[in-house]
Length: 373
Image: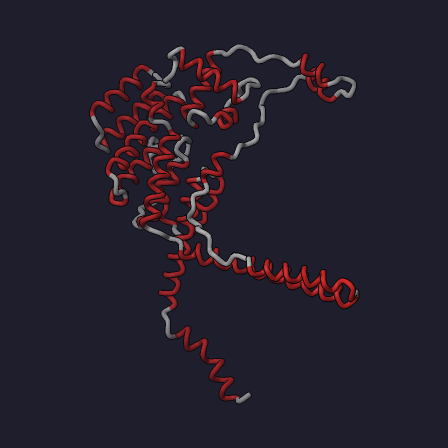
């Protein structure tokens, strides 16, 4: 090869790199990474994956250290808002310098700066009201009446809400009505679902999927290449067998033809990565793990090979009657997860061996007795 051509080829990359400002390239790459992490955080939030959300949040915070301070970028503000809502039911988590400002109160402060991102004014007011009511309701649920009064006073000084709502909440706090129907109508699960609808609308208007689509295309192309390699390996093995046994050449040709049709059927279409798969996740049932202690007699009966299953079922204890404490657990669980999510409610409280069907029947009894709404 000509030495002059080699020198030209060697200097070409350096000339290309020198023609572009590296600081500008870094800024574009950082914006793509932040967009990818932003979409990942929104996805983890919509899927209610708390641990995965915190892991992605730590990476986002490493790229954007101002997450807990004064934030200016729109998507960074939304991430800070989601982080506070995700930790909203944990009163010991602090996002502000003031100790009495709980996560949902801090979220309400940030939410007021995001009004321009919400096209529907009623949706903005609805989320604001849910943040107010849930800040008070969580304090009452934790048995902290003074904190509920402080939260109500803080909202009254920093935000504008309807006077009748503030008076109603003040009466509920004074009378310590933890399970008041008004509080249950503004549940924490309803807050999460309303914010998820806001995220869907925001992502549809502000797509941040460039890096995600490129990564998806790369993964799918690599899968197609692996599939083609497998087909090629099978075809070569068939040709070797055909050379060894001339009698089976007709069958091998048919098999090779089938494999060629499969090669054509390999999909190269990019699937919609923004399709909401939360519906499948909702219908997926989590395994139930009972927290009830097993006595020694029950354990010996279960492990004994001499006794059959019929005898073991006879010695099994029947569930006790519903107590006032169990009813409180049930009401609190429905308030937190919503009616119908009995498996989740069973994982939060010890219902003394009861099943989801028993919880559903008991809830119907409470409704008929007008003890709950």
